[in-house]
Image (cartoon, rainbow, N blue to C red; front, side):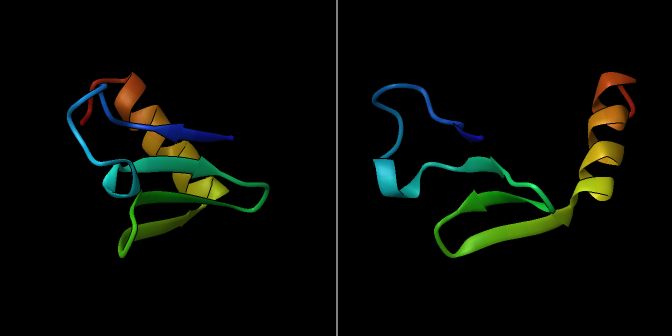
Length: 54
């Protein structure tokens, strides 16, 4: 599942940041500025967001 994080008219499509959830990893970012997390790391990030820790 890939989710693009842009509002219409804000970014040029190739530069829009995205969250690409894959089976074993999650890639977050844009073109050459990316962060790759394991699914376990991504689950920790999700929990911290849900719990308003970040």
